[in-house]
Image 1 (cartoon, helix red, strand yellow):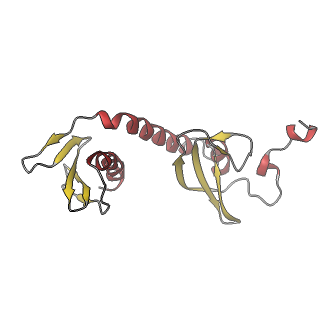
Image 2 (image 1 turned 135 degrees about the vertical axis):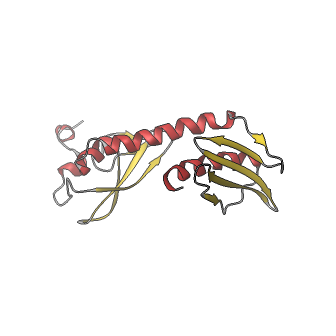
Image 3 (image 1 turned 45 degrees about the vertical axis):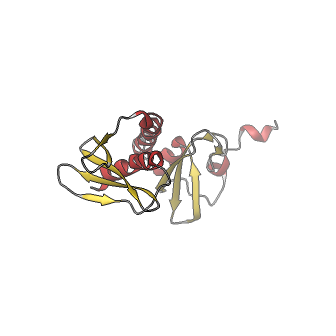
Length: 165
């Protein structure tokens, strides 16, 4: 390693790249550390915070620590990442959940105040989620090739519904 490698801090060292005032526009789980943080250019990341700034063309895909500094917020990036980690854990355990059959023969599960139903369609399976307290409902538009694929999609529907229904 050359002498410069110890002082290079990626885009943190580049003139013209804003260091604060960024906004997170999305977050993604790569399922394993497999991408270099585009801000510090030194840390392999799994959970990608997609950051944008009005004075920077495009977006940067960064890790939690860089996101904290870019946003000047040391709480929200960790909360976003924690939600993603919890969702990843749920995806691992979700297939082991026990589903029941309704009187109409549809497969369903009641969890966290929601009813998730997987039912057959002409070309596969679809998902419906209902807020059991308010009755607000949303049917998925996507058709899944198998019942198991639809059950896994029901977890995404639950996570969406907790924010929107």
